[in-house]
Image (cartoon, rainbow, N blue to C red; front, side, top):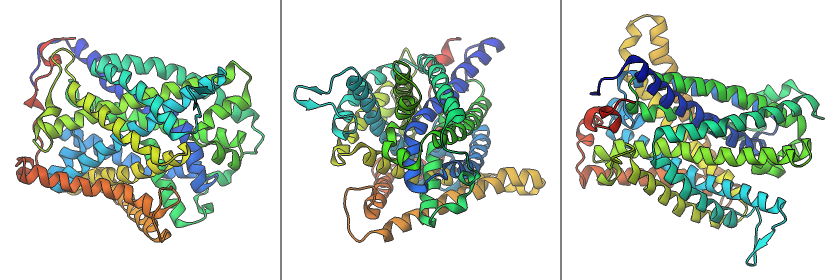
Length: 498
């Protein structure tokens, strides 16, 4: 990749400040949101076995991370899975990988807007404001929470367009506050909780059924989602290896935080409390442990985390669309680079617009906790799909490494292949369970046909878009399976030393 001359110190500072910063900040800020909504959500599926599921889910995710690191060293590209799977497994699964990654991210932005709105409404309620213009400011209402959250999305779009550095600085400010609050309250709950610690929490065999186990595993994999954000900005750094370092640091940090928080929550709250409070579990924990104004701190941390999570999701989403746009598998509008900030500004704004439209469909599920459970399950399935395909792509691309000794064969082929097959198997089993658990369709997270229809529609739409790219746009990607080289676009950072 061509670049203007810069000193080694300047280059290193740019790489670490942007890529490690994005990976750690993106994953860690998302971790707080996952903890807030995840402890209650996963409790509805597997009871008090959340720590066991988090540990088990970490193993295939770690295998996926090693596959990402190896593929990124071989072919740095902001399209990551879309490019790697296309070259190794073929353009159709490659396009599908890119498509489900992007759609999952947009849905995440959409439903997280409801979380942001819900937290704002909780603040309003604390201030004594329970209605406005005849509308009840109910934080458990999907409609009202989403409407408030959409206003916040507008501000986040503007910040995301200004570039990686501004986004990273903003996220680290939020991160320090979130961690201080989360570690403080969870640490206190761990010491003073009324419910005795039990090693059975780490026993997956106490989960009631195979379907619950598969659903819990997919949910747990989803909670780790975000560590791969660094690989979407690999073209905006001078050292692609920093992407792997940032992603792995973030992944291990998330594991420690998740286990710490899950045990702390279960020390302080019963299973009934976890299920009942759902996405408000973290504010509820604050109210149990402290009096005002200290009890409000977890609520503020949740707000900061939701805001930073949406912002962090925008970064890889817009850049993934940039990669697909320059291959002509998506329209040329996604390739427009801001002349000053070097970001896909138009694409970022369009992603937020689509997220806002999708958020409006959530009005069909009135109860916020039900809407979140449906969205998280749908995203969890498609995350398992694209992680699994990317891991298999690594095993196929580096299959010759099986002749380079046992260690290299294990790391390059064995671990990615097993991790990918585990995730694809879990997703397939869960999809089959959804199809057979209901005999009619209704808009409810308890309805199997509805839960299956969400990821199924996403995959079918992806195949339709792939057909458009191949037969209408006549993208060369469907001839070669190769993504456009990273040197195809010259970013402002290539012209000016930082």
